[in-house]
View: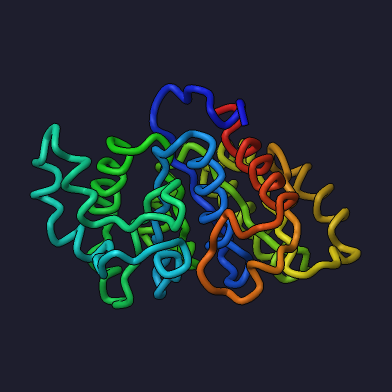
Length: 260
């Protein structure tokens, strides 16, 4: 826990990435934010920047209103001009996790919004979030060619590669790392953390092979166990996880922030 509580010097941006769906990007974003927020007593936000109707806003906690990133973008000028009152103005567009450990900027259901999330707008949103929160966790989309995805990647302090112990998921992550290296982001790949998440009680024969492989490609590998509380795909509550699972997520979150 002490590793999670240390002073990070400035706001840090962490992106959870893998161009394949179903590899626990949203789960990893929510539970990493919950572990960090719990240890740090707040100051953490999870942003659903998935381009195709992401579910983080629905799964992360209480929907005290229906506002999403779309509403924030519509009022971006007013929020930016709030000065010392920026946190209060931004809060009007945020949801909160069920236990209050982190804030949530929900994605929007309208895919047309992505036309508005151009690089300049994405950077403006990131600037606001880093001015109001110590850690920004971003659940990214699956289109590595989109301007949004590339803008996020070029702005982060750390990448977290999420995958499950399946060949197709690992292949997708590996291909993405090659793409990042080819596009001048080798430093981010070297400092990345791979998060291997178990979707079933049995780890399967690939786990150790994938752990060794990604340990050779990224700075560290964290493994988190299966937990029955996550199986329904409904709202994620950190307190509902088994004690051993919560411990594993605290350790994974600490591995993610190590060296920042």
